[in-house]
Length: 494
Image (tube, rainbow, N blue to C red; front, side):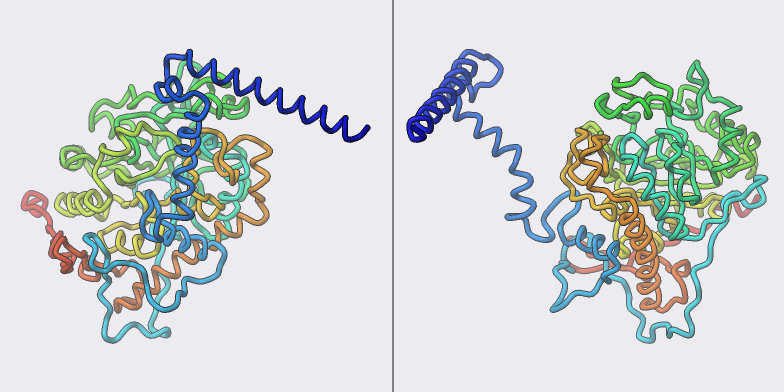
């Protein structure tokens, strides 16, 4: 009897599967959108299946440690070890190709700095002498702008608590200030994006009342003109990620795509930008900076000329320079691939423009754009940056595995999803410590590179301390590629 029942059940299952295959066959052969399925019904689905899984197979089985983009396995492993406090020690030699064009080679000093000769890396102040409440920044490495919305609630909570332990700042991103940013009690830089989320009134304009309230809990404000992943395009948060809470914080409709304008409607030139900087600084008493990607030298030249005509008091207190290789939770590929200069070119050019115009001491420079390792961060300091911002480095510290699903709300590690089931992967009590470890160990390794170069702390790094490998395999001193420009004659006369 049991055998008959089993046989009958198996027959029914087989018949049901046959019906499903027949249904798919008819559907494929009659549809008009996909040529492969129309000519090869049913089995044609294997093509799409393997195409979807291909990137994951390549990541784990076929790609070498230095082959992947945007971050290879060796780089991710470096960050993971720092976040887990496992140290950056390897055995038998490096897989880093010192003959590859663009490779960094730091100039070791024959007599490196002894431990008793080392000095703590000094903090720097934003807005000193130019605003009522200057901001003293302690950590060289800090958390770049990631909006609540682009990343999840437990991710923001972990970053906030970890930043407080490490003594670094967290940038809110353009999505507004959430309660989770405030949870850890860390230093916060409030970003004002083109949509003015979190700082706007009912008509979408800047709210003086809201800004005054925010000035009580944030250390500085950052006017975002553009970011490296998508210069000329505003923020994009797919509707599937716009929850009721996120909609309330941003002042938008739940479940609808959150798309920011491609620029501030009230800022159409450099003078209007400086007007807004001055207004915001006087209103809040806080330092005010500008975040932008760089496409050429016109912007910096116009900014310098306008500041000299109007006076140093109108200058932004800091500039955040984002490279074209910067990341984003969602960006058009045409812009992500081809718009904006790399941080390798943009950063030294911006610093040179500030030196030439005599504004370098007035304006702090923050570098951003794939600076996730201590070597890349140390290079940025050599190039002239005061601080380093990284977003994806801290995402890796939270457990990100580069699954490239940030915009789909299906992140398997809970970092960029609002699916509560998937968020279980990100345990705040564990991950905030990894955030702190990553920041602290990055700062320590930057100091280690500095001491090996013969300087007492990281802020003494200069362009002569690093060499860049060229196409022929030979390296050239960075200060030969970008020599000290010195101030222009008009600045000396002034």
